[in-house]
Amino acid sequence: MNILVINAGSSSLKYQLFHIENDTVLAKGRVERIGMETAILVHEPKDKPEVHEVSEILEHTTAIRKVLALLVHPEHGVLASTAEIHAVGHRVVHGGESFKSSVLVNHEVKQEIKRLFDLAPLHNPAHMLGISAVEANMPDVPQAVVFDTAFHQTMPAQAYLYPVPMALYRKHKVRRYGFHGTSHNYVSDRAAAFLGRPLEQLKLITCHIGNGASCAAIEGGKSVDTSMGMTPLEGLMMGTRSGDLDPAIVPYAMGKEDLTIGEISSMLNKHSGLQAISGLSSDMREITEAMEAGDKNAKLAFEMYEYRLRKYIGAYAAAMNGVDAIVFTAGVGENSEALRKRVCEHLTYLGVEFDDAANRTGRGLERRISTVNSKVQVLVIPTNEEWVIARDTYDLVQSTTH
Ligand code: ADP
Image (cartoon, rainbow, N blue to C red; front, side):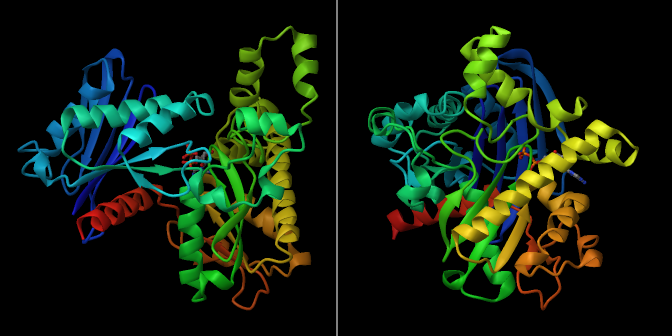
């Protein structure tokens, strides 16, 4: 079965075409600058040269039409016809409290995703555009939606409520939802397989550290806490996001700097984090290089980033009354030897025995970076959110046809 996975943003769209039984990616690519005359389409078919196209793509329906045309193109394509696409899976950021797992798209599901626009105004409307665009091009193909929030719906009330008047929760659904759930779910499964132990018996702390970053406490395969909250702003310090701060700073800074709601929101989401402290970049590679070249602000940004991550690991070990394994994933987690080393060297109190040589080898592979006998195991597991979306879509379609 071939499954097309789509991650639609407001002006971009990423895709991957999976052949499930063979566990292969037949093609992947992206469309950028949707809405412009000079939109860019990059198509990477398996075992064939990459294609770059610049053309007018004013909306998502056209973007999908062009992607489909390339997938079946005589020269650049990988399929004989679009009838060979058996289902489409979409990433959807916010599933609120309504979606506790992935579901097939129907009228009610679409209505519910629309009702959640308020909670994810930048993301959910774009995902809906993606769903409608597929419907317009392939009306008979089943579609599924996989939510970033769903995995964290197992959090207990003590973890998901904020200590503010309950009316905010009852009337406006103000609570913690958590994000990156697809990734936390995937790497926790893989960690159990790597360790050769049943997931049901494990206490895991998974650290998804990319441009956005979050930690999760996973007990017996269920998320019991995670660092992102009602929005992806809470928790760890990130590339451009502040993460946790005293909420009183918001009205204070607004008053002192004469900022609007939009301006303070933009400051905390787009102009904070590594970018603000280093004054240089939101990109961990550049921060590390500058730090190694002696840049003091880059060093401070790195140290704050690592310190805040380490504090969350400590908090989650306390939340679960112990931890069997800590897992690093995503761009920084998978690639930054320096960050992992500094975190692990401060976790000796938990019983982590760090293996420096292992930390420096095996990039791209699932691997252990603690000693085999370390009381708490430390793993690096490359994430694969698209694969989870494809697999969930496949399972949902299979369950309706059998
Ligand atoms: P996104 O959240 O956008 O999916 P990624 O998971 O791709 O982001 O992570 C991007 C981050 O990973 C960037 O900060 C980038 O600098 C960092 N990164 C990638 N490679 C390395 C590396 N070799 N060393 C340190 N950081 C890296």
